[in-house]
Image 1 (spheres, rainbow, N blue to C red):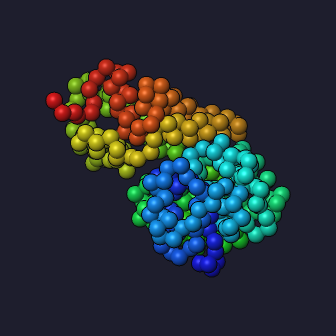
Image 2: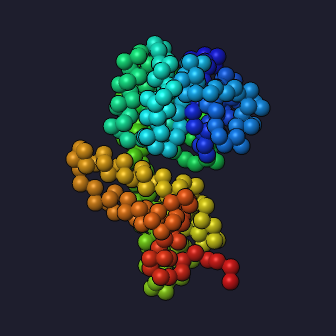
Image 3: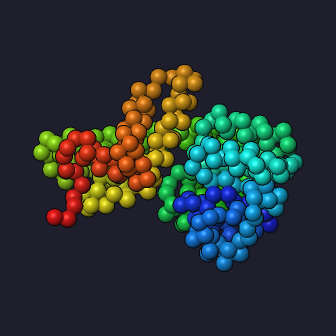
Length: 303
């Protein structure tokens, strides 16, 4: 694929900003959807990006449209809603959904675009906004083989590792499984901390032992290690978004059907955290939720 491809980008959020920045840095002409939060657009516009007033206008001015938002209803609105991408869908256009989405919704969007000759690729992301800014994200791509080869050079603009995991829709399925594993660990880590604290065990010793053994993980280090320093921002992903992803996962498991005892338990942990007011906070605020429900102190705070 030539670097002269025109790229549209809808969803300049915590992840999308870094992705768009790196696309510009690699020389791709970039059109953005007008965003009410202008702070994330200023440097992109200064670097040469242009704006369009509607999602349909973005698609009209692009060869490839990336969508990077947080939920399936948002993706459906962008593609199928008034002045949506579908209105400008045509032969040769490629739509790449980098969101974490519900597979049934993905199938509906894929079929609607296919009826207009537009190819659909799902390419959900792993890693954090830091890696997005650095151009070092991971992506799991659901695409036909020829479409994967066509889009791969564009994905290299902001991805370090690119995995072709199957036909369209496969990326979103794998991402939900990935997030279930990650968020189940997070829920278990917070619960373990509460039990240790309630039992009077020094949390520094728990950290030392787990860090030296097979139970250690990147999530444990980001959550627990940073928490011991009073930092709850080690894993920059919102509890509310994790709750949504686990809901999508449990819907998927039920539809197959597969029993999902672990996924459901993790989901309810995040439901409880959101109900207690932590939905907009990062994952490590599960420790705060456990403090409230267990009536114990976990997070170090100034006296």
